[in-house]
Image (tube, rainbow, N blue to C red; front, side, top):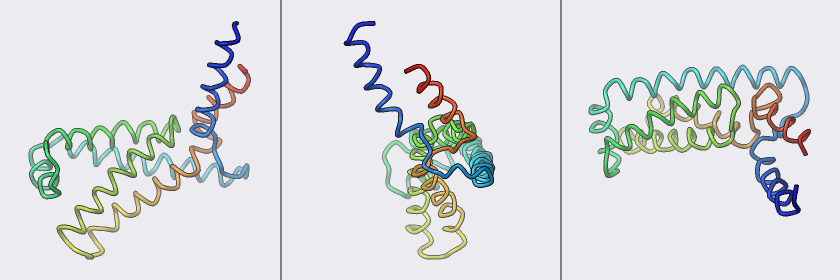
Length: 160
């Protein structure tokens, strides 16, 4: 291996480390509950994405146009696929922080929509706010020890 290849590998590992490494304590109970929460919010979110795909035109006109985004059908597909594939990746704990960032952004848009349409009425806001809170936690802390990120991080460390 040349020095240039070695430098590239070190740079890649340096970039991946903060994405893959969890910041949670090593407590097994905490790690197990973190994994259960990660999988639960992911499986519930997949349903939201599938609902958008089931009726793209209604979501595009009823939500995306009301927010004022251009290309409402395009953004409906963006939201749906983020909710489906981002949630699958989050459930697996694969690229957890990246997935959580996409899902958090989608939920912030949902919160904005509910504030714009309904004002500060709690029922429409609470679901999106709870999802956003969970995704923010995953963005900050990563996937935990029971995630593919953790396994990948360990494997990369051994390769070095």
